[in-house]
Length: 143
Image (tube, rainbow, N blue to C red):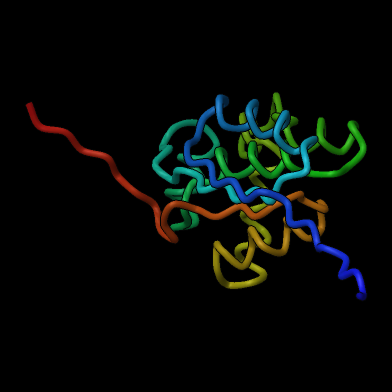
């Protein structure tokens, strides 16, 4: 009898969220043999994300950038560059380089999801990163 070699498939895990908590968790998970998909919020409207959201009519890139950086298989110095926030300049102050790169890739590809996919490829991201929506979301509550 011929022995068939059993192909081992990594467990699939889907995580949803945003902010710093999601990226911290993903930094640990990426070291495990997992097939990771991260679904990331696009409701941020503050800081660099809020400015890019308003001026470029794009979903806010900050939480996506944090997740891409967490799952990227790059040198630590490149990871630090993606998180780097400009401290001066009338137009650049407060913007992170990673947010600007994601905005540029969105403009180049013509689509936020395509921009994320291409930046994921460039950064050798382990897993898939998807926005919760392909447009900016506004959360509202009534009391």
